[in-house]
Image (cartoon, rainbow, N blue to C red; front, side):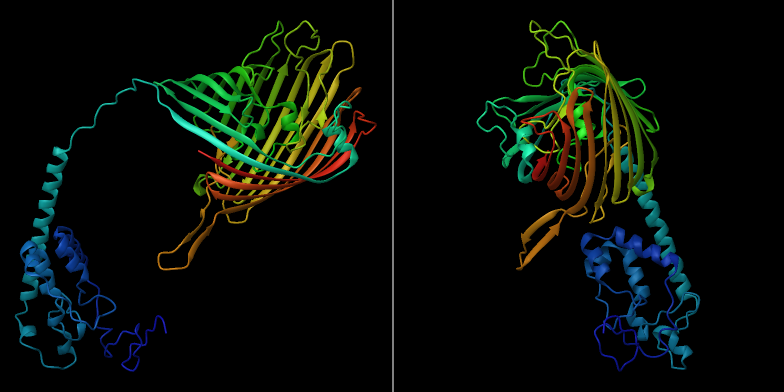
Length: 569
């Protein structure tokens, strides 16, 4: 019978308030002056007396209590005269039937009901008003004393120490562990020849094999060099025999127009899914076109990053070497094979009132590259006019591959991207085109794109950085945990759950270059244990057509299941 409010003597439930008829109408709320006095008395009381005051019911509180208030201890009376005055005024023993006598009317409720007044209630009419004046004067004295103490405390506070610039570089550790399992339950015969294309190999034409491997084992360090410089050093040990460096750069910050300048190995600004960290991406592997036109993304270069004061626009631009030097740390060759890259992004809608649960992002990016299509056997460098990718899984070889295009002199890439996030729902799409020029043969045209949707079943959302134009770390409403309770049983939290789907297309076949045409459909499930750990599960169905013949096979289809356990710090 929770919440009973019958107000009758017949009801004996634990929540019922038993009072006599007529008592409710006679009750009035305390005045502002009285409430102020109560608060001040509590604030000035010693810890012990404050607890006693808090535990002492006031007679005219609602609902009225049938229990008598606990008397104050002698120490409380001595320490706090204001509390003594208050309790004298509101002592329920002077208020029969717990009915408060209003300050404006010193006549107790019994007089209204025709009952004889006690000696205590027959005091002179001016007594209560005199008590009220005394109490008001006491409150005023207390307030003045508190103000004086506050002024003295402010004068005694030490002055804030002046800013002292750092005298040595700072540093902090970073890292991530991505442990993968990939299974290939079904594929057509052509896929085996794309996976093992070497006729001289004993596994020529064999199906892809299931595997467990560490996709990423990264350890790094980052920090500031005094006030205006920064650095980062990150190495991946997923192949212990051949470590690969990732972000390796130094830079200058606090430059005009909110800019930072970095020199070293860093990501080229092409493809939003590449610029997003692998820690935050929705799917285990990046889309076909993003990886094909910007393989492994990072190159040695000099690049600037900036944004407007209102964070509406963000840009990146720089020059880079085309060769991936992550395993040998150097580029040697007479042909520099450079590229110029730029990206402009904007978030014209960003809902600050919901802390970024709603936003719209668009971007346009471009690249001009000068590969060495005329490389000879005497040159140390490779011809970087090549476009290839794995089909969104970790197969041994890249099933979509143009090979190194002979005679390629230049190529240009134009990319557009858009992202809309509304609460737990998000849709992302990118499209890229590639025009490649050859010295003595016809020009080539490659292109591709993808569209993906995702939704948080548990209501979270994908955060976004307006100053970088990329997505950020998801923070679950509740972390995943399963623990034993002290009093028996168990307690559990379920983390955050996200579902996603993606369609991806890439065309690397034109004229006499037959890199293949790929179409992938991927379903994904992400279980976020915490903001720094999660499990990803992907199911992929893919189809490849118009591939250069391998043992007379030019097409094939496949099914792949992938699982990744990941944590970062």
